[in-house]
Length: 254
Ligand SMILES: Nc1ncnc2c1ncn2[C@@H]1O[C@H](COP(=O)(O)OP(=O)(O)OP(=O)(O)O)[C@@H](O)[C@H]1O
Ligand SMILES: [Mg+2]
Image 1: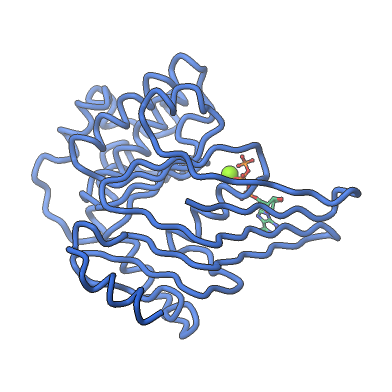
Image 2 (image 1 turned 120 degrees about the vertical axis):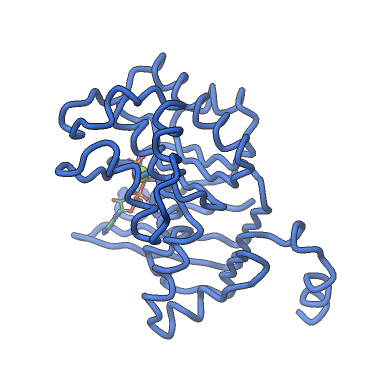
């Protein structure tokens, strides 16, 4: 343990992992079914592009929600997050019920493209993209317009999400996740509800945009084929189910 700490201290900030998890467990149960996600060890370094690929129900969103500090682990040995040269003990923050601190870290450093899109239906495209900036009190500086142009949304800025196609809505969600220039973007099935051709195009655009901005990316998807072409590092995972199907456990590491 002491040796490990000394090694970490000797690493330059660029080499230190953004996420360092050890023996993190999340258990979920409802109506006689139980699910357990176990992460024996996970290290994600700055600028890495990570993919979590697996079938429905294997725990992808569960892991991403923990990495976004919205879901509290049931237990953990180590859960550290490094941002702007400072290490944050997430395990301790959860234990001490420091939800405000976790929310502040999330707002500042993370962008989250949610599986369900998560756009606010009563805000225009412009205001949806700008939301992550507005929450942080960032000034209008043309970022929203530039992002909209890159995402092919500039003609739709005044529209409400309900007036857009599914693919357009997903591009708005991507824009919002990038607008406040976070260090990390977490994307949960960012192309789940569009046809495979559109999905491939949106993913390629998304990866190009995060590459240009040197953002660390963690993306969950079923679509391994083009994820592989985009050069992401795939996390290993293994799911075991009990014979009666009432219990499942997924182990993820990487
Ligand atoms: N709020 C909850 N309460 C209880 N169990 C839950 C809850 N949310 C998810 N689960 C269960 O946890 C397991 C993992 O769910 P999760 O949403 O992480 O899977 P997923 O890999 O993201 O699936 P999908 O590809 O369908 O999005 C599933 O068995 C699910 O039924
Ligand atoms: Mg999911």
